[in-house]
Length: 135
Ligand code: ATP
Image (cartoon, protein in one colour):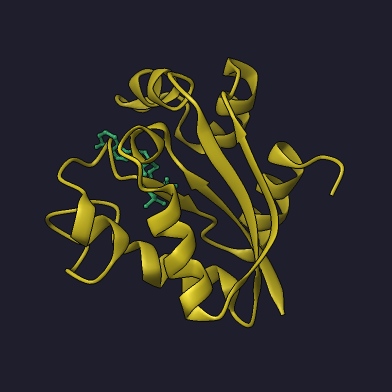
């Protein structure tokens, strides 16, 4: 069993898709290990997206992710990291995510792609520490 860090980004919360995302996680057979609604401060967002520092979309991304409440979750289960990436679909909701995935079913724009999921065991460990330092 492994753990992954999932975010329902501010666009997902604004659109009322928190329940939809959690339902899909649970139906897949994954378990919730932690869950919090919060508005991220800049330092947290910059840490989370450190690998994108310097890219053209970095400032917009940090503005967006701090722009309203999000839901942070730790999700646990067999192959939880790739399993949630499969549920989420590809980064671009139209060009990459297929219908049946969260992004493919509900997204239109790359920036507003509704969810985040850790992409590796190293990322998951790093990101869980950022969002849930007491876990
Ligand atoms: P996430 O890390 O949020 O799960 P990802 O791993 O699918 O997404 P990354 O390439 O790590 O995608 O990009 C991180 C996030 O930055 C994307 O989810 C998206 O919100 C935003 N992003 C990526 N590329 C672009 C872009 N070209 N324009 C605007 N925003 C972008």
